[in-house]
Length: 266
Ligand code: NAP
Image (cartoon, rainbow, N blue to C red; front, top):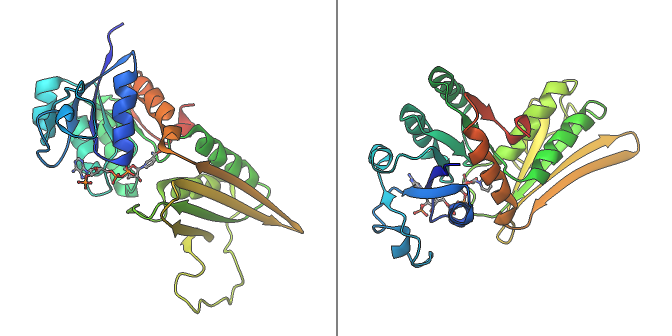
């Protein structure tokens, strides 16, 4: 079988660097290029952080990258400012996106979904690649049918740019599909410090903790009569995301539309 040709955007980042090693080691994949916004050297091997054997060229323009290296898949692990354009450009150049970067707006997701459909191209946007986190979301959705009082506490490292996390938003959306709509807390509650009650998503409260030392953690708390159910997931290191990325790179090759959330394909 021919190997899947992969390009990575964000290869110097914490997630991207792990993804580079994952693709390099994978026997069904070939890392053909990386996309960056600055000229960081001719190949990854020129960067101190990668072994001298990683002779993978760096491009700053998607168009040039695609023309020169013909990737099947673009894996994006950049930031909320760059990812939308990368995804759109990739689709327009017939490259299938596997997107781990979070922070899309609903309108952006809709537009990308339309392009993918028109082009009949697979595209996976996954706010969380960790299987345990997917299960946390599934179980939270199930629990919300019976326990509609729910608050989400997500905790991440303090270099994260978007809040709440894409996973917290996705969890809230899944819960919203089944939960009897209600506004949480006392109707007359007042915040004496702004934001103390967290963000409001359809009456649910979402709290974002940012501290050095954390990786990616989330608790979904359900309260009932005299009882509390907590569903918790912890990503202790970025390895927790890598099997999900490899899975998506293979899956996206078989798909002809955009899927948002790994729970829809596992
Ligand atoms: P990070 O360490 O800051 O890495 C991001 C990298 O992207 C940096 O090296 C950055 O370069 C680079 N970059 C910025 N703009 C770029 C552009 N236009 N083109 C190419 N590269 C660009 O962040 P991270 O912790 O790896 O996280 C990356 C993203 O993945 C975040 O959105 C995060 O929320 C998400 N994430 C997703 C999952 C998941 O399971 N889906 C898990 C963890 C994290 P500079 O450093 O020079 O700015």
